Image (spheres, each protein chain N blue to C red):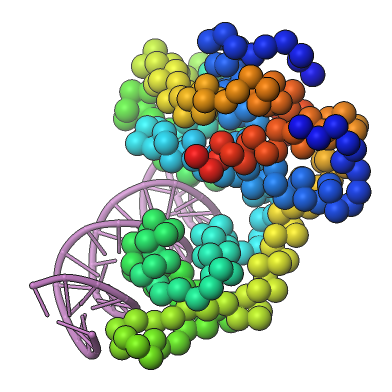
Length: 146
Length: 146
DNA sequence: TATTGTTATACTCTATAACTATA
DNA sequence: TATAGTTATAGAGTATAACAATA
């Protein structure tokens, strides 16, 4: 663990490339290891609905896809019984999409599968490495949220 | 920065989820910020060719796509002038794909674009946070390589 | 007979444009 | 007239199956 400063242009450049590559490789591995479950774009919608019901329009906006794409995605999820569609009593044009119990269970299973690989890797580390990751985890989360 | 142990099942579980999410979000942001450049699957092939020329067959195997897909991808790259195709003098069935100077330049530009976002985020950090990332970077790289 | 690369064809996810029904 | 959702259609990228050329 370096106790010296990481301050020169060259050092920051090397660090940014190393971190970027590590993040990309880890997320690729996680995705690969948890293949065969819910497709990423479907998972993303399910996770969004965990915060509460939403209209297809709102889902399309937040997921940055077109309305027809969201119609399709929601249709797939409904066919699998993971979400339910209801008419909005206040606005005849709108539809409300919400998670079913089955959808909540699928979300939980998928999350567990995605965490498993990372969990196993972390268990293989020594305590010092784990502490280094724990310290960086918060900083990475802050970067990702920017 | 925690100086205490990260050892309980619960702590390791929380750390693995936090790290996984941070890595996924960062790589999504990097991809988004460097959109409009070479498509990911094309970039991956170019990067592979940096190590030396290869046949479409070998590229398909290593990139885990079908032979027809690789025919298509290599065709696109050749149309853009980023790779060149030659007949193999030793085996009439084979074709050798290699990077052109233009392909090498495109690779360099794309890499720079992808690092830029991360580089800017790291510059905004304090020295202590940078040290935490530097310490974790090596551990993350080791995890990603497993 | 096996292998390399290509073509033909189809499936999935994405998009834009046009349509409907409500507001 | 504007908005929510759908349908029609097309464009990437992927796959499998069938083919030609070569080993």
